[in-house]
Structure formats: C-alpha cells, structure tokens
Length: 356
Image (cartoon, rainbow, N blue to C red; front, side, top):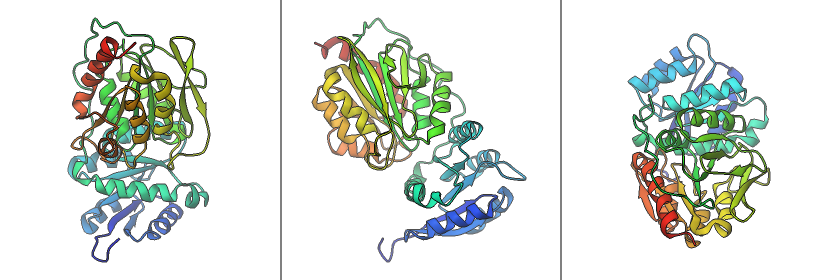
C-alpha cells in the first residue's frame, strides 16, 4: 500500500468482547485496514456508523437487543454498505446466514470460536474485507423475491453427454439463486462450485432447490449427473467430474489440498471436465474475488465448450469474471439478468452443433 493510499475503515459488531478483540487484532495486522471502532450491539453500531463512517462492517448474527439479521435489513434499507456476516457453524446459523446474504450482505464467514481463528480464518477475513470494500459501488439491494417468470422448456433434445458447469464466490449465492429461479427443469445436468463454509453448502442447495424447477442438492461422492439435476459441491471438499459409462458422468468428492486458498475449487472441477466433456459443456463464472476458475474455464474453451462470465456491472466483486475475460477463457460477458437465457440458448447450440 502506498503512503497516500486510503486505508479501509472497518467497524466490528459483535456482542462478545473476546471476539471483538480477536478480530480487531487480526485486522490491525494488515497495513491496508483500520479498525475504526467496535460495537457490542446494533444500537451502539448504529451510532458508530453515523459517527465513524466505516467502509465495511463485520456483523454477528446472534446479539442482544436486536438480532443481526434485523439490523442488516434496516441498514440495507436506510444506509446500504458492504457487510460481512460472522455466523455460527450450526445448521440454524447456516440458514440465517443465507437469509443475510439474501438481505444484502456481501459475504459470510464462520464465527471464530478459538485461537485457531488466527491461523484458519484471519487471512480469509482480510481478503474478504478488501473485496467487500471494492464492491462498495455495486452493493446491491436485497433480493425480495425471485423473478416473476421462468424460461419455458423448449423443444431441444439434449444429448445425455451434455452438462453445465458453474463457479462462483462472493455474491454468488444470490446470483445463482436469481438464475436458478428462471431456468427450465429439463436442462442437462449441472455442477456448481460456490465458495462457501462447510456447513452452509447443504442449506444453500436447499435454498436453490426451493426456487428452481431443477432438482438441486448437495453432492455426495459417486452421485450420477442427469438431466434436471444440479449438484452443489460440499463446503470444504473438492468436486471433480468423472466419466461413467459411454454417455454418463458422476462426481468424485475429495478433501485434497486447497487450490489458491479454496476448497472447493472451481478450477479443479473445470479442469476435470475439460478432457471428458469438451464440446458437450456449457461453463460460466459468476461474481467473486480472486482468479479461481479462469484456468479451468480456458481449458474447457480450448476443448470446445461454450464459456461465459458475469459482467462487471452486475458482479458484486468483479474478480473471477474479470480474469476469465482477460485471459480469453470466457467467450462472452453476460449481465446477471441475461445469464439464465444465455445458458438455455448455449445448451441448445451445443445440442445442435457442438456434439459429435
């Protein structure tokens, strides 16, 4: 960071004094960040937001006087700004965290429970705060309801060897939710890698399933891919594609080393698909920080796949899609509201002209 660069101002909102201190110490270790204050409840946070004008807030969900989700909704209505949710890893906490993403939060991280936070999550939190700060001009309004229409099933006869591969990170949970609310139920099988904490992937899949004509569920090792089914990579596990029989695919779930700090890795899924799917694939990268997925997407494109990336205007963080466009991995940049239609059209083109 240059001497004249402006530091990112962070406000930490958590009812635990211990958590506030641990998070503050982690953030103060980075020269680009400035912890301008902490708050033990939403009412104190409200006053400090007005006084200190932070760039990013970290927000606990379970707090006294007013829960974090209610506070987030009020904040997004009257003073929208980047918010990173710190949530417990319980199943209930996972569902609430996903509601927070729907309400406008930029990202979610597990709430620290021990000193392991320093080693395990500190670098990730710093990374996400910087990405959240870069998203300030694109902080979105909460998604109140799915789009009013679903794309009708067409007359295309898809080849059983076709598949759709999607990767996303920051902002991806709600972007994917919007897309899946519009997709018809007869599309080829879909594999999804979303960077998300371990216990959140199951509830995320359930949430997608609730708005989609496609069956969506968390993947298990050996699951067969089929038309009308979307498999979500489990959090903290890689998902790879493998050939099953003459016309089919299954997924392999492995807890191998992280790739560029990510597990699951978009690159790993895409790279596993390139040699066996090739021109039978449609693949895309959604909003997210970093560069995960670009290398694998390029391998898919070179194998004949139709590829795309979400455009800058509709991306919460234009990191992964930007790299995909700059490296030539993505053929086209597509706005979020047009991605569902693009996927349907691309799958039809693949069925008509790209499959031997």
